[in-house]
View: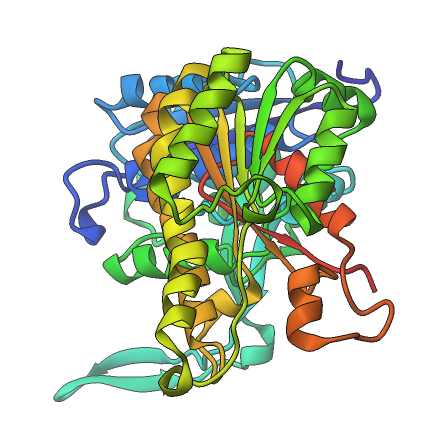
Amino acid sequence: MIAESRLRRVGVVLAGGVGQRVGLNTPKQLLKIAGKTILEHTLDVFDGHPEIDEVVVLMAPGFVAEAEELVRRNGYTKVGRVLEGGASRTETTWRALSALGEQECDVLLHDAVRPLIEPRIISECVAALERYEAVEVAIPSSDTIVVAAPGPRGDIIRDIPDRSRLRRGQTPQCFRLSVIRAAYERALADPEFPSLPTTDDCGVVLRYLPDVPIYIVPGSEHNMKVTHPVDVFIADKLFQLAENAAPALDEEAYRAGLEGRTLVVFGGSYGIGADIVALAGRYGASVHSFSRSQNGVRVEDVAAVEDALARVYAETGRIDYVVNTAGVLHMGRLGEAGQHTIEETIGVNYLGPVNIARASVKYLMETHGHLLLYTSSSYTRGRADYSLYSSTKAAVVNLTQALADEWSCQGVRVNCVNPERTATPMRLRAFGDEPAGTLLSPTAVARTSIDVLLSRLTGQVVDVRLIR
């Protein structure tokens, strides 16, 4: 319930573009990146933000039904309306403002094609609106900006402004509803407005309500706009490298999400897997653990994996969560590795997740369940002595994103946990004793893993970091 002492906060997601500059005939916000459409990534942040009360989507003409289906499928609780956008950004914004009614509220206007918006930015915008009536998100310009002018054989530089005073504008752009609406009313009454260079909402306020100060909230280099073909690839890589976090849950949420559910853990005999088994069991889940040391189940053995899952399903009648923590770490130069080492590393670290995914999807489709895999920080780049390990872990990240995309229509979520160095038996065998306090505990990683399983995330690499 909204406290009477504050205004309602509405996130307006502007998704009216068609995507011609990225070479698409459909809206670029429906392009899939990291297992979800760009629009879904953006709505995930706004719908899940505790300081946003309502979300309104302005969709490209002819695609409202697709946006409504995404809202329904993801169970977004704050998206109250999906409206058709206009032929221009100005018309789309005005349609949104008109739809919000007469009751005063705070409005956060955000480009749908900025899917990497951080919750921190939204929180700082909300806080700034308590003191200002207009707020811009911007970052310093790292490039020198030049002012061009026509020359005899092409453009020449006329001026080089002081870079220290220049900022690159982002979104959301945030306003008191009455202020941005008044600015647009004046703009739309001005016959010269369509030909002016003003392209964003703060520009409209600056020109038509010059006495209203516009406060700047620091943005982020990651809060990029997907506009050109190269942006699609950059955004996809940023999703892989972003420090995503699952929402931390309380005891009641653990009990509600696990009691009466069936959880299968491959690699559950020790380390992170064993702690997941213990934690989930404590909250009422029916937990089934398999490993080569515990009951002879090797993840690289397709038949063994299929048989394990079939036995669990026959016993419980459902499988809600499947977790694979099985892994091996062999260090050394590739040219010096024996064939057994190569086959075991690829078999356990990559074919294992593939086998588990193929065998579990039919069960997870029934429950709209969740597959959870694991990578390591080695996936971000190959290093000497880690060629096999890092490349298999990179493959798991790509597998996660691909499966999240493939299985999204079946309601199956797929994520990957990326723990910092963790005090597991596998690490102890590889590196020996390490200084106390420098490693994560398996219990901390297990708790985050449960948080991910109970979340709505999919296609994400979720980092677990040691608090220093």
